[in-house]
Length: 547
Ligand SMILES: [Zn+2]
Image (cartoon, rainbow, N blue to C red; front, top):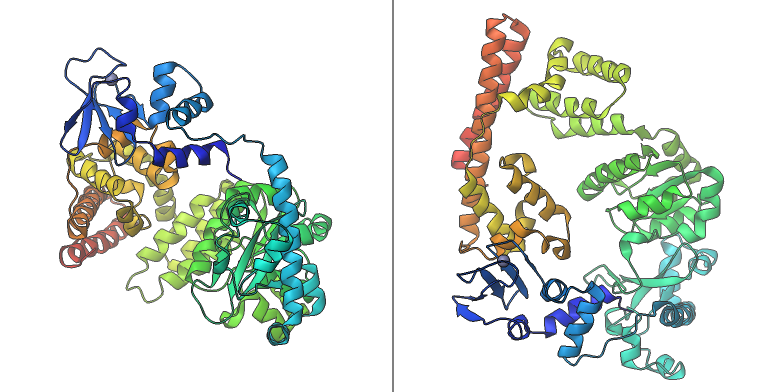
């Protein structure tokens, strides 16, 4: 069932903002957009811009803007809910009463019946049962996790339950055909209500997994297996975090019952918060591939944020947790738990792997120093610096200097106010979100020097469009005249951004080098010179290479 925000979003797509605002304003067309005199400040030239396509307005005079609802809220001085009501009435759209609880009760009981129906259907299909047994499942596992198999169609079932197609839509398992002929995992909330389903392809179809639509099912707020395993987790105060549904079930069958799945590699803050109610120690055991390693790093951060004692389980032979426990058994998996790594050692190993084959030790030192920076306790920090020094041969004095370096930076940095370039960069990613997806992992906020642009870039990476629309600078760029070109132009902008960033780093490094030379600190001089070589190489590469 929809909540008011979802209803408001749907409604926004149906309503023409230009037509609606015409009730209040004298609107003229200008280029692709529409303009009017702003009612919120004394305005002589029309500075209020309206985009019909985006359903947004923005005033370049006073900065007011947002969606149609923001306009009504400001104009009529009413709440968001009332604004939605006003727009809905104007558009002749019926407003649903947002009494979710009763309607949700229906969905839960329907889900329950559907899950049982799928399960019975699974048990009737010998081929599939055989297949599951071969993958290590047993009848208890099927029963406990209520696994099922979705038939090609469920019209008879729907008829019997008196559920129309429109009604089915409320449940999230819609359209049904997406789920047919798939292995079905019902997903339960902490209190045991089935909030959604995940269907796994059995014949190599894509996508491999398909989930219920996000109605009452909110993937980021649910941990698969928590309901079934929560007693064990509470008892031990420990939880093992895995990626897959099968991992949870197979480990359970093998007698390891404190396992939950984040349903993919992104462990969310909400999931962390929920799990913290049950456990204090968190073992991360994602699949040993690139996605798994990156996911582990993020999960580590979230785990630490919510004060878990976090450990990482490393599985040999590139096996997933379920594969490993099937091959080597429970005791060997318990051994892996016993030998699990703390955050520092895990990150250290990853840094070693990443920098294997590098010509100098400088990139490794850089990464290891980042790890040391994570540690707040000065004694422990000193220990790790010692360890880095032993590993790399760089004297501790240099490493200490490097850790401190950040603080000196601000006063020394030469700011290049290349606003136009940064402004262009942001406009590209605002007007075409695909551009953002291309580079967001590669371009971190440090590449952007102007504070307001840097702040906005961070916000764009982390916020929903709903929040962004309330940001005046975001709207300003969205409405700006800057025309965005093809991908090649965008990559050219990125290249220039990187170039300036690297040049800045170089200038800073030269200042440090000069200082070290004046003070005759030979070790530091050598170190800075090595860094300079690395940097020169990067700059040179940039000239030839596509980004
Ligand atoms: Zn204005």
